Image (cartoon, rainbow, N blue to C red):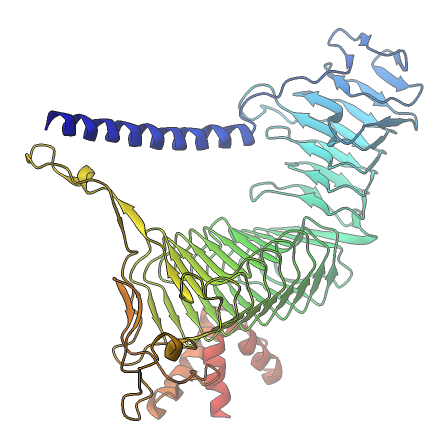
Length: 585
């Protein structure tokens, strides 16, 4: 018994150590990524704090002005405040990595008339001491040509209050990232994957003198009840409400349309191509994203994060984006309805750390990863979707109390549905599982789990701990107390099964694992195009409720114009209520 106690203690110690290592490792990785340690000063030419130049004869000094006299193929490190680095039209050339001009917590430096190309970071402003600066840095980047870098200009963390003006910034992956409280004037951004990339908290002064591919930038802060002009090259809305963004053609941006802490706005009828992300919402709620074409963006088609909630994403074409078609992180109560989500190189629709999301009546096909992916979130609703020819149809990891019903899940390369982790109590019925790749003999998979009952035993109970056990995945519900799902391989698996009378239900349960069984498998496919009829007494109250929602809650009417009000209601209301309205015509 002593040996077993020792084994238990050792196992507990090992598991604790592994858990600590995983958590600590993740923390340290996050700290490093967030740049919480000052960046080492790179090797290269130095303009020292005493004003001397070290490492080249191609920079001539006259007081506080340092002028290039030739092309340079090395990093220039600026260690002195209040100077002017004048490129005089010469080129600072890299070989694809490193930094062109490196400044660490510098003040009052001007970089001008310099051609900077082929670095990882063309110009990098970074910090030395933790904490926000007590005053603006007042650095200036003006009249430069910055091309073919991964990052044209990088403002890391606590470098704020700078000016970026009269620059030509082209053919970079990102033109400018992480600027904060900076002034942008007369900059031309051309053919970058992303012109300007910002966080949710960054606020800059960017006017329409700045252009993306010859079209002006509309960067609005605390605006309301406005429509973005039709000539926009990039749209960024910060702390706005009741903004309309419609009928634009946007490309070459980090986020083609960016909403930060913006509410009650509509993004309708736009074409978003060749951005990094087509449309991004950060901390933004009660917006409608509808009828847009979102194609061939280099990351996600639509991205929601920072608790963006109660948004409707409806009737969009979200096609051939390099990562996920629609990507949610830490956002709740959003609806994705009636979209074409196809041929994306990641997931069709991806949710991580979410709750109360709705995926209704979408066509989700030919995505390279999962059609729908749920990670760490309860109470999602997946209804009436066509999910076909993806790597997997639906994947849920550690998700519970989700409802999956009236979907056709067909011809996916992996499982139709895969449930992993601590998932349980998902309700799955009236779906069609048709010709998904039969793996381990099934069209669906519920991963088995390791349990450690010995760790749950009271230490003073005197009981011997039980060894770890590999058990079947947790239980889910596979019918609605009357009808289950249609399985195209049902009669192949159970050749002796028969239909019970004329009920359309097979007499042999469809076995998945000891905790999961479809007790009432259907013998014919479900028609997912039909919406269950409502009793006549409930139709009119629901319609009035929908109208009240559009008038009172949304606080946006179009006067007495019935046509415009009707269009507004169609955009704002959920597809289910829209069908109710249609039935009243």
